[in-house]
Image 1 (cartoon, rainbow, N blue to C red):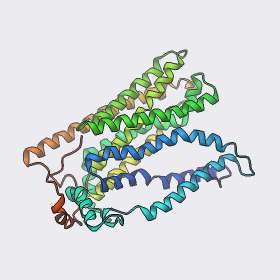
Image 2 (image 1 turned 90 degrees about the horizontal axis):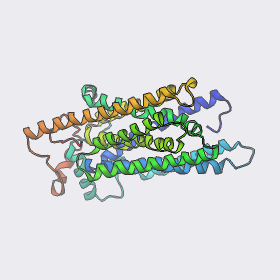
Image 3 (image 1 turned 180 degrees about the horizontal axis):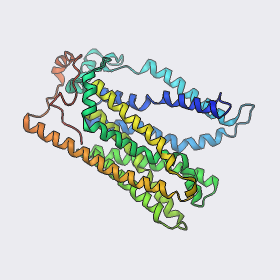
Image 4 (image 1 turned 120 degrees about the horizontal axis):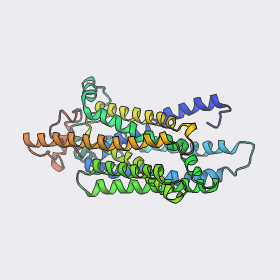
Length: 370
């Protein structure tokens, strides 16, 4: 990005940056599902996603400090050079340190590798394979949850696409100075972290509460959007509180990813669902800024109307998906016993399943996390 010198080159480089970034969240989702049991997914997804919240808080301060570097190189270029170099070096470190799966982890003994496989992949009959399975892809396309997750991701990121581009403008139009706007933008990151902690806590402490926590966060965002839309412009503190509340929806994203890790089995099926999920992610970010119409500034009536609709649709979608999986759980429990747990002495049997790669539809022992 620092090599760009005009709009065309910067646009092309930003597209390439997006291409390389696209692997991050799907990759983290796949890694989490290989190492941790479904009951552990919500916390683990929340932990690594919280990094984005921390970056949101401190990124503004660091950017402000970097902007004061005076040299022949433009200060904004230093932003990309410094952050890019750190990311690049850390990527090299992770290439050598992070194993492909538990079976290649050098920091585990042979027995520990067996146990790591048994407690996660052995139970779910979903080995880490690089073989593409056309039948699993077909199953993905006829699984209603795949499309519900796709729509959920579109309607979750659509408000974010607009607020990322216009959030500071909205804040400034509340009547705050440019410096205060920068500080308040950092506060949005603090609230994002707060909402992540909330959804992780609810999902971890209460059984089958992940979908409900996602619905709760969208309800909080709905209240925030209505406050900004309906509260008089003179009540800037109340409208600022609405902006703090409206960010809750974004913190549902790690819990959405944890639902994929816990409930979608089969290497090809999980990869395809992740692909659909992030196509929805990108679509939402493309559409979002288009809802902020210049002629409607500074109120942006259409944008907030669309946000309100998205939050309502998200609640409907996630509760619908919860009911579908609850019905499947009930049907499976009526037809057979509880899930067989492969641990301890059965680790050897689990290792015999290294090539077994079943989907959640094929493995009837699976109970869906709600």
